[in-house]
Image 1 (cartoon, helix red, strand yellow):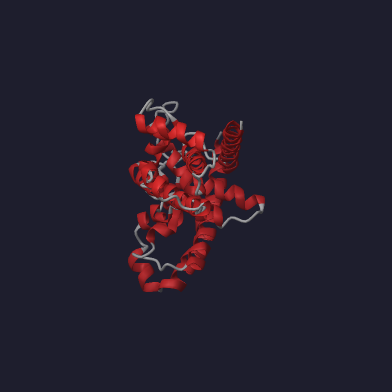
Image 2 (cartoon, rainbow, N blue to C red; image 1 turned 90 degrees about the horizontal axis):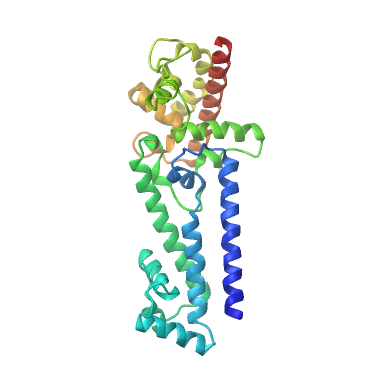
Length: 304
């Protein structure tokens, strides 16, 4: 009965983790088409699979450390004789292998304390999924502007971290996150996926294709807003790296777009690794993206 109660308790915890994670994703208001790797990367969150693995490995330690000798003997007998490869211990052995943790045989020889085991499991799982999300993000064409170097489980991306509790800042962060994850719908994106036979030409200026580069740096219809909010961004960078470096490196519109979308991808090559400076750039660029978004919507609505 004790084992059954433990299993039920761990199942309830897993269910709560699922509900909690779903709430976090809905709060961030990213579209359902957003790449899963992007959602977890921005939130610094683990997938449900990993949360269940944590609890599975915790239960394994409880069994191996149990004073109930009959329970241990039955489970270990099944494991040794391979009575059923679908048993708990055999499934758990695959999980241990996935995260490069000690095998069950090794744990039977030396079992760490509960605290040390949890620390080892947490570190192994977080490292595995951080690396996996980095790899998946690099493969997604929509995430080319996301800085994968700073993806770590338990660390929220700066697009959320620098937003305060003020509702207005949260909304601005949502707009910025959609741009960062490639889910901000522009005419070029709609045309690419043939959404209502959309014309890719910018509906505001009607001069060229409305892609992200055009929206952020080129559209003349948004120049008034861009000039107002672009000035403090430019000045902040010049104050840090100097006017000569700005002229040399940021006259290129692709580089400028990267600065606006995720400045941390330029750290080491063009920008210093100064967290206060990078947070300031993130905050300014968040305001810029939001104002461009609002002005675009206003102008589109006036045309209809």
